[in-house]
Image (cartoon, rainbow, N blue to C red; front, side, top):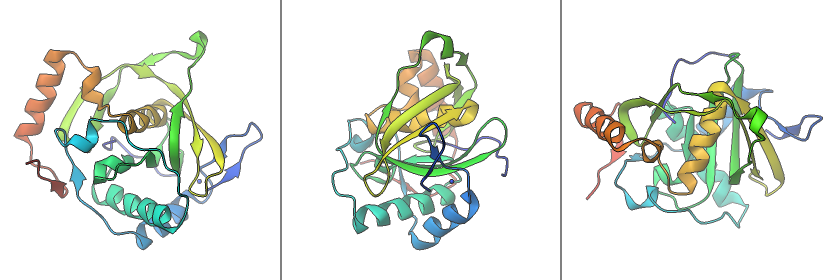
Length: 214
């Protein structure tokens, strides 16, 4: 997901409710991943890998760990707050994030095989803030999403985890999970809004390396 205003302020400690602690040592953990990784160019809308469901992660070893490191490096190069594997051309269900919530607390982590949990009606408060995407560079549009999200999945070692987010971070969790099932945020817009976003993209040069579509 493309960055919006960032505040400063986690990998696999658990909270009392069973959610991953993704805030402790966030800065150090992100830096360690990034320094081990190699930045890769970003795929953009139209690339087939972005428009189909990705394969499940089944091997939790060194190759996955290196992919996650590369994803953190790529995310930093592109100044994003979330990145799915298919955004660097890899057909696997894994995303990384380095995202503040609406209280400015920084969350850093990775989720494999994410599933977005259905929210009870009383938690479905919609937030129609602007949304952007590294794979639709230079463009933004308002999109209503719940302001609270829970994603379950696995960590890089294959252990079950749950991640929860509020506000901007909730938007990030939903956005990145969508990616791994073949959906971009523009697929949730009206035809007119989608056309406007693609026009914005055409008028702006990407600020980071991208993979040209054939």
